[in-house]
Length: 338
Image (cartoon, rainbow, N blue to C red; front, side, top):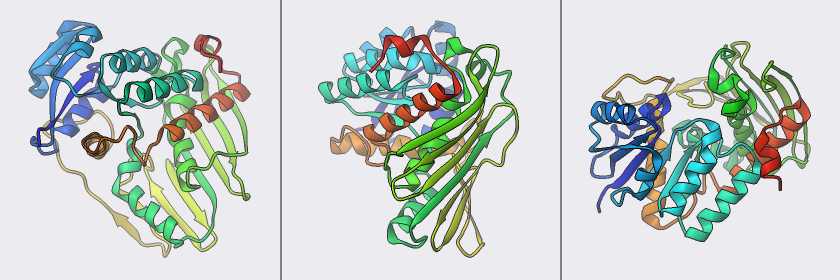
């Protein structure tokens, strides 16, 4: 079977890490064949580094490239909606960096369009494809932890001077940048069920985006997800899943290579070394979501069972609710109102 042919939209840091991670997979299964950026020089530099045959100036050319099966979108948050729509309109499957969109209204429109076009679409929640997530999912389902009662998760770095996080014009804020991870692990641990109530508070910057948020997600049956995000402080960055029989901790929970088990023992995992250095922690693990995309497309599935469209819509709904309670509003909220 021919390899899945990837196009990369945007030549920034996360796109570098994704292309680098795909390079650790068998060339018989995956090939990055094209990259696009707003400036041709950026695309050409990226293509030369990663051995990619085609560099495009602008994203229309990538959308129209007949040699591309699926496009990975690594652009800034506020560009996701238009780029995903462009690729779907030109018959491309899409893996889009999280958050899928700025709000639930945009997300719903993309999910609907992907279904109409009969194309695969997935929000790139890479965490769920790490081996420790898969192992913990099996153990939760088997009842090893008993009834899940609480998830306590925090995710924070000193990021207050990073444009993609601090600027409203780029769809900034910790709810979209970091909160997508904390929300998804709570939903995931409680089996994908939507919370009945969301209670949130936070701090905003001069731009009017959140730089620190504390929230509780209250689930049916009494379970609670307690989450904190921060661009002001380094946090523990762990997710503790507590059940009636005990708890398990995922360390660096968004890309875990370390797990503290029920009995307190520590398990550790490794990732393959790639051709180039990575920009972000454990980015070699992006290979897991790339392989999930290949398996889904090969099987003719339009969504992943691990990150479903309903999952993405629930995450977007919760992000909207948290932003509403904290007082963060984007122009797109009125434009794409439900």
